[in-house]
Amino acid sequence: MKNNKISIAYSPCPNDTFIFYALANNKIDTMGISYEITIADVEQLNSRAMKGQYDVSKLSFAVLARLGNRYRLLNAGAALGNGCGPLIIARPGFKPDSLKNARIAIPGRYTTAALLLTLFLDSKPNAVSMPFDRIMVAVSSGECDAGVIIHEGRFTFQDYGLTEVIDLGKWWEDTFGLPIPLGGIAVRSDIGDKISGRIEETIRNSLLYARQYPDQAADYIKAHARELSDDVIAHHIDLYVNNYSIDMGETGAKAVSLLFEKAEKTSLNGS
Image (tube, rainbow, N blue to C red):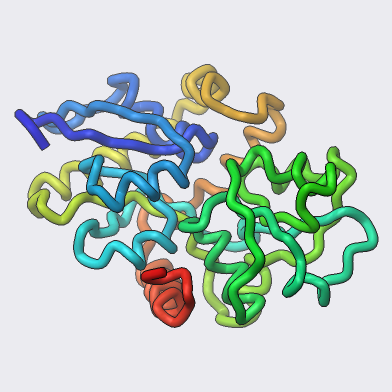
């Protein structure tokens, strides 16, 4: 943080651009803080967090488990909920019991999707990391046997002739009885509580503004979205922006703590 300027980074996915629209476009009071905004794929943000590149960043919960005390989680802006987890997809005829030996595309080794795959298999997968929007093409073409899809892919994988093998979110919810924690907004630990509190309140107010005036945010969201269908964008926001995004609360915090605990026992953590 320099001269009351905060560097903040989030993904181009509709849930993030919806949440940050009002902040980015000066629609709300930012409480004396100015923001320098970067928009990048979440796996890029995960990697940059290892170097503490941004003051505030959207991060996969899986990478937050690796960062120790370097970042701390804010209660506003999270992607966490029910029925919104990653899906394992494949070409028709693929057998779920083939997953342990399959070549599986993942949207980045530090993503929560990659961690959930490892937890589900109870072993390190034969994973191929690539940008999330390449995964369905890679599976459809036979480059990979299966893939773990996130974001808009949940709504479009059938267009590539692919089928769902496992819903990792449902597996998590059925196994542990908690919502699936995907990603959250984290602030560098060297930023004090007073400023962090202002940042959290501003993010929450930005989300609430977009909920009140969703039509205003539409062009900003579409300018950054990988999938331009209005229906897909609307479904994406409805699924990933929910009451946990306003405040994680006790249940959300419990889900995140459990994921951190599980991450510590996998080869993804500290590898």
